[in-house]
Length: 65
Image (cartoon, rainbow, N blue to C red; front, side, top):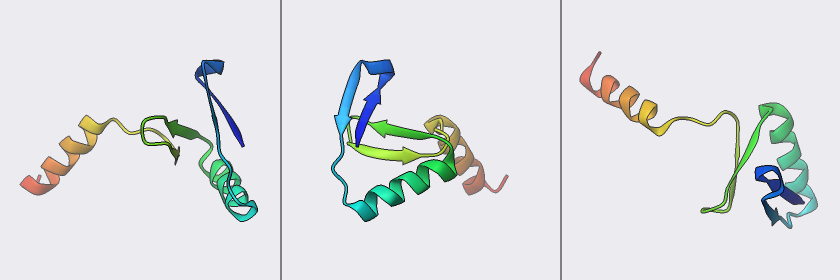
């Protein structure tokens, strides 16, 4: 699988097994979006989350709000 990133500015090639490739495509179809973290070399499915909103939410939960 060849990933074309940033409108062609970057490319990355994955070599999954057939079963893994099928799973990747199923996840992509279910989530509607797929992102690739170049630093960690991982695929991320779904909507990106703002880390500051996650931290704020966790702090609210810990404070019992």
